[in-house]
Image (cartoon, rainbow, N blue to C red):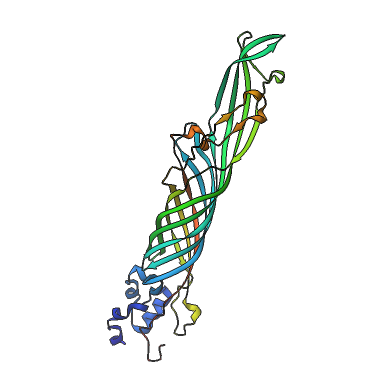
Amino acid sequence: MLLVVGCPLGLQAQGRYSMTERWENRLASLSEFTTKDVENKTDVLFGLHASQYTGSHHLLGFSAEGAWSAAINNMPRVSALPGGANTGLRLVYEYQYSGLLIQTGVGIGYQCASNFIGDTLIIHEHMHDVWNGQDVEYTLKHNFYDRTDHYQQLYAQIPLYIGHYILGARGIGYFLTGVHVNYSFWGNTRQKLTGTTTGIYERYVGVWEEMDNHGFRKDVPIERTDERLQIKLDLMVHGEIGYEYTTFQNPKSYRVRPGDRLDCRLRFAAYADFGILDVSPNTQKTFYETPMETIFDFPSYQFHHAFSTTDAQGYWMRHLNVGVRFTVLFGFQGKERCILCDPWRH
C-alpha cells in the first residue's frame, strides 16, 4: 500500500477528490493517510469533485432576480427617491474553464420607479375678473405640490458577463462582472399631484382662495396617465458576488450510474447594475400645460413625466438596481478514472 501511495498521482489527476471530514477519517484508517495529509490539499479541490471545477464545462439554466430600482438624475427638483422595483427572468448559458466563467443568455424584465418632484409655482399676470359689474385686473397663481412621477416598462435583455470562482475551505463563492443591454418595448407613465389656485388683486388686499365662483380651488387631487418614456437602449454595467451550492458533492462509489454525472449548481448572489449611458428621452413635451381657455378647469390640465419634457434637456438620467439573484445551472460531468483502485476497480 505504501508503494501505491508513493506513486506520482499527479500524472493521473483527472479524477482527484478532496474529501469531506467523514471520508477523510475513513481514508486515513484504510490507507495509512492522515487527516492532515488530506487537509493540505489545495483549496481548489476542497470538499468537491475536481471534475466539476477543472477543465471545460458547458452549463444551461435560468435565473430570477429582484431589486430596488431608481432613476438617478441631476435634474433640479427631481429626486431619485422613492424608487421602485426591478424583476427579471433569464435563460442562461455559461462556459466554464477551470475557475473562469463566461456567461450570456437572453431575458425579459419589468421595471417601475417613482420620482418625487419639487413644488412648482406658475404665475399668470394681467388676468381679468368681474367684481360688482366692474372689470378687475389680478394675478393668478397655480401652486402644484406633493407631485410624484411614476413610470413602468417591459424590456428584453442580453447580458455578457465574465467572472471567476472563489474556492476555499468554507465553500464555493464566485463573482461576475460585465455589461448587459436592455431594450424597452412597452410601458407608460403616471403623474400624481395636488393643485391650488389663488388670486391677488391690486384693488383688494390679501390673497383670495377657495372661491369657486371665481375659479379659485384648494388642494385638488390630480392624476394623469401618459405614454411610456421613449428610453434609448440602456447599456448597464453589472457586478455580482455570491455562493454556489453543488447538489452532487459526495465522492462517488465504484458503481457510477449515468444519472450521477448530472451537474446541478444553485447560486445565491447579491448584485448591482448601473447605467453607463444617459437614457433621458429629452422629448419636446411641457412639464405643466394649463390651457388659457380652460385655465380654471383642472381636468383639462396636461402633465408629462419630468424626464420626457424640455426641462430635462441638458441633464442626464441613469438607472440603478441593487438586489438579489438566484441561478440554477445544469450540465454533465466528464467521466472520471479511478486512481486508488484494485484490479476490479473497487
